[in-house]
Image (cartoon, rainbow, N blue to C red; front, side, top):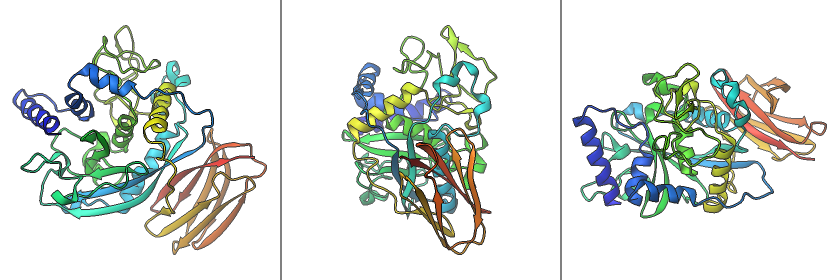
Length: 387
């Protein structure tokens, strides 16, 4: 661990000295430092390639958000956190708003992951450390993920995905990290988490894609450019790419004798043009989940927590009826259900509290999307109908 963070701090200082732009994502830098070489790091990433279970079902991954803040603005709201969960669910179901950036050459490679995310808990703690996201104490121990050193301890990592929110040094947005050989979770800067609130200060990264990117790392994906044309990302259906992408280019971008997939979540493009994981990236992530975190997806979140509305959705999977139970005092709640291709199948307006018994018995078996919308909030959840 000491070697890992010493390596990072040297890189951090050298980057400023040389006038270079710092990495937006520190995952591979820290990973290579931990394993000693590029080759060893990639061998570790490729080691989780057991065959997928033939019985794939909808997977719900509970997220615990640990907010460790110094300035009051860094103590982001529950509503901003919910906006990030909603953004993840759109990204991992291939339903976000950046389809205009997906060229016809890559349309057949983009697919729904079969995963959804829910918010299990939000924990908060003040810290006297200004840039706690990458800070270590005098003994080189990571602060943000240890209550003993001034941060917040992770929840059980086999059942929950731990995400810490902490201010980063300039130029770094987030990273996935390990400690002492054990996976801990992800750290994200509060100014790129979610789609409202503090993200207004970083408009190029204001759509929640940083966490999507780091979850890709958590589940075994590398940056799409790998280490250049000669050492790619280890995924067969992503093209070789010379380097990271900046901004939001016009199609096509060309390198390594092919078209760059700059709209892939594992590139560095601006959030507004990131729109896809490929089929084999999704396969790699599911392989890692099944082999390394088999219980991650078995623990459910108790309910959808909105600012003034709470919703329970059950059963999931559903056969004949889907129940949506709303509590709270908000007068206008729009409940919609869409098919996997975006066709509106059900919509109603209701005041909370309410208990909706929605008939789904005549719908085909498959994945559907439930959307709960108010004047201030939006939540999207994947539901499964099985007959």
